[in-house]
Length: 408
Ligand SMILES: *Cc1c(COP(=O)(O)O)cnc(C)c1O
Image (cartoon, rainbow, N blue to C red):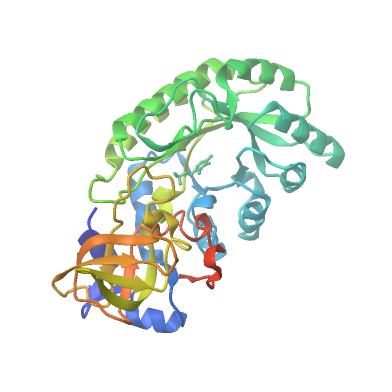
């Protein structure tokens, strides 16, 4: 996906990018300082509407809030999705603060502390157990509090999903209980005073291949079909994971959502309806929901020429938006879509390199880009900044001030 497609999604007027309906320079004045992250409600709502209109209606949509835990954004999401998935006690608190029903919050992730588990049991949050140690702690917390915890078993499948930016299932994993161990674990649970709703299988992240996603969802349904006979009660919860990717560079093709939805329709109306009529199928998405609604806005502090190469030095960098520098697990560094936000109509006339303000050559935001003639005080905008941005970046590095975040 190219910069001009992002410009079209957000809108432009009088040569400026619009974010939240505002010309960028006015938004920057309103925020009061650069750099900042801005999340556009319109772009976000369009994405959710597109998903709702394409996916089978029986599927619950869950927001994996680690992708963007900004409280105002989570609040916005809580009214638009069916569930929120959290990965820590603090995220759980932010999710509970939205007023969403606690049983619509799921808590996943390895290394949950005993305190976090007690917090989840006390609140009535669904705990997705990743190990037998966690199961023991959940049972102990339920005994201590006089409550019956609700859980789902996160299963580490016996297959791997190809084409994921990050693989989180198949082979040995810190995530989930190996599928071949699950029957014994479930037999042990039967008399233990926990309510087991079903299963969670999340096998990978940032996948742009609809065929592979559909195949892994089919295999997930086959796998849980062999495990479900060991559940004490009929399955009520089937979290199929997600992993839908978004295009970050010119090499990436957007995910064919229609093809994914077609596969899901066959599953939901076929084997899921037949074998698990009481189960709510859930898709759990982070990046795909919020990634495209966010921009990271920086200001040019310096323009310098070094031996024939022009550098634009901006007031932000990898300490806020690590992924755009190519250092968030990427094997090959490629430029994220980037524009001069206050000169979007100007013709590119220069090859420039955009760097952040950190003392490391890793702080590279745009390498050898054709950009309109930009100078000090112009606003450089990096798209695809709504997921795994600020909270996935080393903000303390060099001690610069934290950027503002606004939902507009
Ligand atoms: C991180 C995570 C997600 C969200 O992944 P995205 O790639 O952002 O969609 C969903 N479920 C679990 C269990 C996760 O750990």
